[in-house]
Amino acid sequence: MASYVYILSSGRNGTLYIGVTNNLINRILQHKTKLVQGFTAQYSVDKLIYYEEYDDIAIAIQREKRLKSWLRKWKVRLIEKNNPYWQDLFDQLSG
Image 1: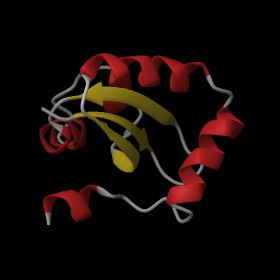
Image 2: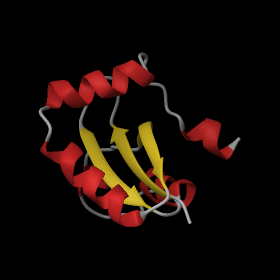
Image 3: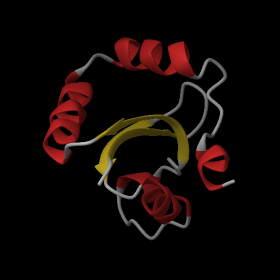
């Protein structure tokens, strides 16, 4: 089963959130509908701007922890390398 590390944003250069899941579409829907109480709901962090897929959940968790420790400018560089306009990628997944 695939696992995903993902980055959400409140908007371009906005608040960032990094998470891990084994069901990316359902997890992002939970964030978008604010079923996940806490940080992302409070700050409207619900745009999927980056994700990576892994075959092993342990590796995905390791990557999530590593990304969380990065400086913000490194995270922004990673996002903009793959998604320069900070487009919400959710529609591509669910469409």
